[in-house]
Length: 142
Image 1 (tube, rainbow, N blue to C red):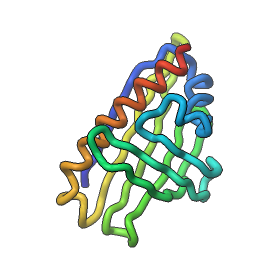
Image 2 (image 1 turned 90 degrees about the vertical axis):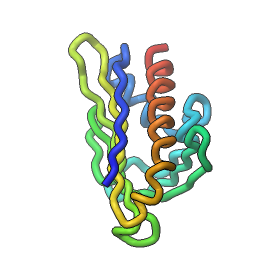
Image 3 (image 1 turned 120 degrees about the horizontal axis):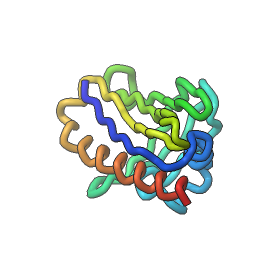
Image 4 (image 1 turned 60 degrees about the vertical axis):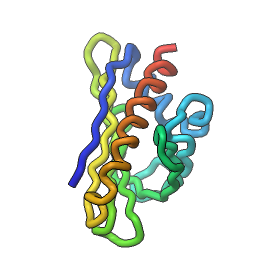
């Protein structure tokens, strides 16, 4: 197992951060890491996601939404071919900070047989999380 997690404090309400996060059609305007996210944000639905990690290859996958709590939490599970080979449980957490700001955390827990051999490649994904979080903050704060 390997986990990546990046957090940022955003000077905007959870409502505003959620609004930007879930306006997936606008991702190409501001999100250089997750350049496509399409599909219905509903538990059980399949999404089409394209990521472009800094210094890495473009990757496309079709995860399934596993959890959704508006203005608090969104999660999905992606798999490579079969369960247990290379699975990624991705989540976005929004924590209200009480001063009309939000702590936003993006994380992913990778499990499966290919995690160890691909661990080096996953580090650039962490850089992508940080870039996306920063861009989300800029957009939500404007």
